[in-house]
Length: 273
Image 1 (tube, rainbow, N blue to C red):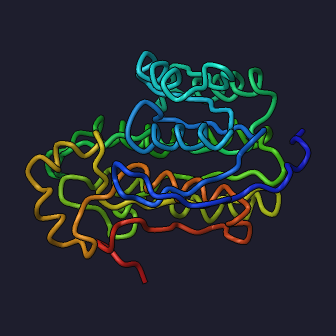
Image 2: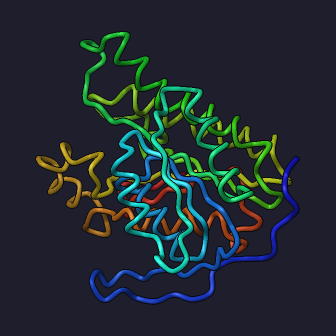
C-alpha cells in the first residue's frame, strides 16, 4: 500500500552561487525520500546533491557502485547521514526491484523517482549492429520501465516521477544517435501515459535537456562545443545543476498542477512548439 499523503513542500528561496553566478533554487524536502539512478555523475549526481541539500534522504544507484558510494559520502551530512548507495545496472530488471526494496527498507518510504541512468553511444544506422540497438533500448527505455514498475506501489500519495528525456526526443535525434533519440522520444510518450494512469495520486513529468556539460557528451563536446554555443541563444552549455533544479521544481508542490509534461531545458538551442 502507498504511504499517507505527505505534508506540503516546495521552493522557499533563491540565492546566487558565487562560483558560477547561477541562481540556485532552494527547496524543502525534509522527511522525503528520492531515488536517483545514474547518480555517480552528471545530472544524476547533481540531482542527488540538490535533494540532499534540501533535506531529503537519497537512494543512489549506478552501475559504477564505487563511484556512487563516493558521491553518497560526498553529499551526505556526517552529523545526519541520510544517503544509501547501491550498484545498479539498468539493463538488469532484477536490479530495479532490488534498488527499490533497499530504499524502502532503509528509509521506510519513497516519494520521488528520478531514473537518470542512460547510455549515449555514437553509431550511424548503416553500421549499427542489432546488439548496439538493443543495448541502448534495454538501458534507456526498458530500464526506466522496470524501475517505474518496481516503484509504483511504494510511491507515497502526492509523490512524483521525473523521467530524463532529451532534446533528441523532440527533434528526432542527431546523426549517429538514432537509437538514443528513439529511446528519448519513447520516454516522452511514456511520461504522458504514466501521468494519466497514476494521477491524481502521483504526478509524472519529464525533463528534456539540450547539450549539458557532463561526462555523457564529453566526446561530442571535445570537437563540437563551439558550434553548439554559437547556435544557442544563451551562448553557453547547460550545467547539470540547472537540470537538477528543474527536476526538483517538478517534484515540489510549486509544480502541483503540472503533470504529463516534457519540459525542455536547452538554452534555446531547440524551442519546442
